[in-house]
Length: 420
Image (cartoon, rainbow, N blue to C red; front, side):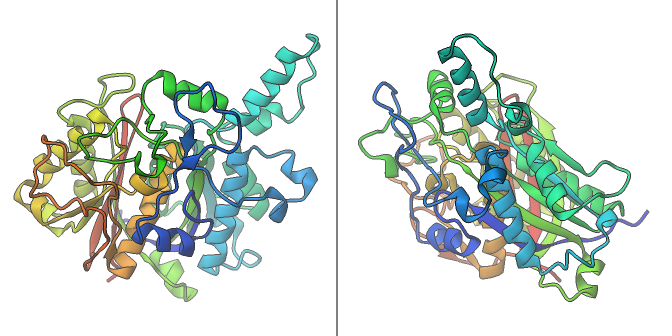
């Protein structure tokens, strides 16, 4: 069976450094940090008092009040990003055969804001169970995919293409990989795919803080996310969403679509090692990159750029670099590597798609976004590696890989290449 080619024809993003793709990209290549003191609740008693919140987002600008009441914030981000991507793709929704399109959307946590609000209301009440009828439909992680498919009428083929993927911080990369595979197998022509997350509340912040996973650099939030730096002390929580329109190549060409790049391969693996920590030798990370290269028939020396998972945690950054060195050998010194979480923070289930958008735009624009907050390189990391420190670098990018790894040892990577 001959596999179909799959291309990217639309992008959408709502992030801590921009609520459109254009704004996101401009701030990304200019090294702008999205970290700031948390505005949504009182952090007085919390060890960490900052995060990368989405700024200037008003649900009333996008949804009727009655509709907004049915949507957790993570689903609102999903619908806004998806709308941007569909508009960017110029796909004619009215004439498109809805049986040929689907939605696969990732979220690592889902409606945690809704869960906190509903349970708080019950606990603080008189014990009468006055839960909202929207409680469960707002909370479940797959509901964002449901809302997108209902809005646009994508019914899809028999392979159940309207669903959510949940694999912690790898969720949206798994969504992209699933959509890619279904299109190349000939099961669909178009997918809206990506992910969203909105976990910056008391429960989300408190939970990650108790794991000692997040930075406590309250005196200087903008430099708190510092991947590969010797003084890093954890990741910075982020939120937002991103969407891609994946499309069968021939279908895109036939309708005259603008093509950003081709999806060249996707890989998955499992650490099978620890609840929250990566394998210290980076074995899962190594395997997932090898699987991605093999899937796309890509030679290691053909890769120009890796957007790493790079969370700014003491264990994760070093193990990922070791995996890159093992996979790419001497070519590792010719790569550009960057960790854009240094600017956006960690968008959890939405990280993979937002970082995929960064990789796609690096190909389109010939610019590598930087790893900001590089002050003192961890002595365990080879100084000859090009981590794109502090400033963007111009470079032709023909192949880029985006890595994401999640709690539970879930690993996913996707490769993009310039269209030929």
